[in-house]
Length: 86
Image (tube, rainbow, N blue to C red; front, side):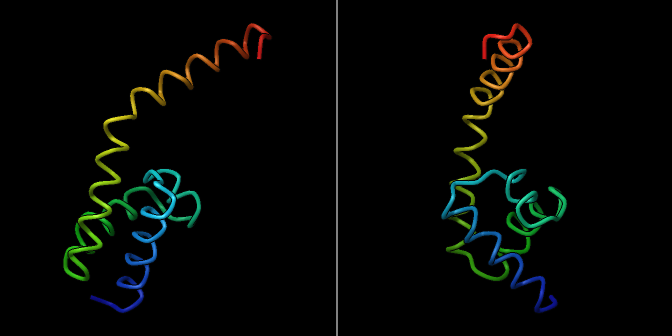
């Protein structure tokens, strides 16, 4: 694997762990696609640093469990904003 890919995967993983970030927010922060972030932290990182990959997996699993809550809040805010309440 190329060195810059290894560095990028490690940097993405550290960002996700430190900020409890989602794949989407990480992709936006680093100006790369969500699929690149996902592939880096779920596939490539296992070859580079397994302990870091396990930590990222735990954060991503927590985000996956809570995503329905974030989606519901976003929808609620959307309709409140449309009514002029928010």
